[in-house]
Image (tube, rainbow, N blue to C red; front, top):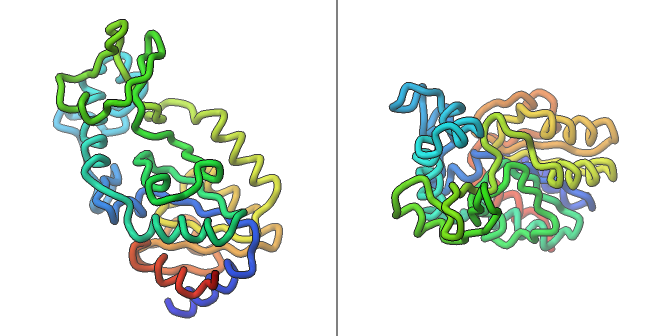
Length: 254
């Protein structure tokens, strides 16, 4: 793996425009659930006999907000009980050293912001868990932790409507603003794309990698296991982001 780290570090050192794409594997090192698979919070069905994709869906929030919020609350409590790890911090430091380094994250925990990634170069494609807002009147409520200690679903103090987090639930569309921001940067091109802790199964993840390769850019991934793009990227660093990213950063001069 050392050769892959050295190769990737050399490419990032030379690159100006960099895209770091992060997924659940990065925050799993902070103790966050990954929904599915080994180490996931939900393997198989929920205790109601539903796939987690159904319980945490937009239609379920409308049809049975209490059930949807039962699992949103578990995610919320996990976020509040965890913190950014050395992987998030290494990415934020890379952004400090490289003013054209962007982060595209699938994670909803807000850890990149907390670690110091600049919001203007951070695309949270699936949203974040707070602040909550009312589906009826739109009023915001920043008190996520307080709401999780009360009966669910949380309700608006102004009109009594059901609150929700600004996240993309299953069966909901990605936010246009985030998609527009991503593709505006993709059209400008990236010299390097680094995948971290994502299984790379969505078009908005795959396309930046393929475009970078087509334009002569460098691509790499950090992941404990193989992904859909493992055979395509230029370098593969097998391991957790918590271990690999600080090591990678140590090879990149300020």
